[in-house]
Image (cartoon, rainbow, N blue to C red; front, side, top):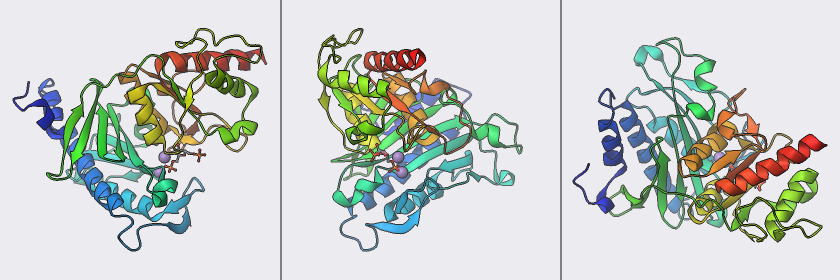
Length: 351
Ligand code: AHG
Ligand code: MN
Ligand code: MN
């Protein structure tokens, strides 16, 4: 219980309330979330000023480990998160989309029990056009004993996440997180520099009205993915049979695609809908990254009553083989994602 009115609750007081339920908690998790929210405020400030400050827009001329163009703000956001996270020794490993190798903390300096993996700036190719971008993070707990940190600590599946979240730098800046106790959204009040609780216990509809996919890739999809998207769009198959077993049987959906995963995901979470990035001939294992994108958002969506699949089963059960592993992603309203998974797995096994 807190004495503060709901709309004056900060992330810190929200997490402290959670911590009180676990008397043995050391406060490390609370201070880690504070570090993340502080970094988010710094990035938010600079994203907002992007058009005003020299040397912040545009690309660096380099490519990251994924072979993608690195924007100056990608680098900037990455450095901010690296600097802010675990300043009090709570973190033993940090992994970032922008860095080939994880950073292992110096164990002589502390006992860091958390592993944090993040996408410092998601949707960064949109920055120059003033489109919403975001940050995604996942927090796991160290498995190994003190001073023996190794790859097993890093390469854990989404089912072992202790918390995850994202920040969306949009028309306002929002911080959305779950620690397994519901999904809660906070909006940055720039006048006091605090994230205040604005969306308590977000639940996503079981069936949605929106589908989000880059449809230009249709020629590069498998036949079963083509059929799934056809039925999302028309509500029926080529023979005119309605979309069976779907929550919105027979109804065609609306298409919305920003091309910023955080922004597409956030809208669908609130309104109901599905986001999909299926395998393509260019990305046969999918384009999105398991550890810094798919798994953290899967934890969020499941805590909001939704579901995330790789087309065969839950994203949360996929064990990473490396920090930058990619996966196909189908995520959003539970009924619609289960329907897509069934369609894809049944028709692939029939081939
Ligand atoms: P990032 O900017 O972190 O590299 O992520 C880009 C991702 C994601 O945000 C978005 O949904 C997707 O790439 C868009 O890809 P396409 O341009 O291929 O549709
Ligand atoms: Mn991304
Ligand atoms: Mn990114």
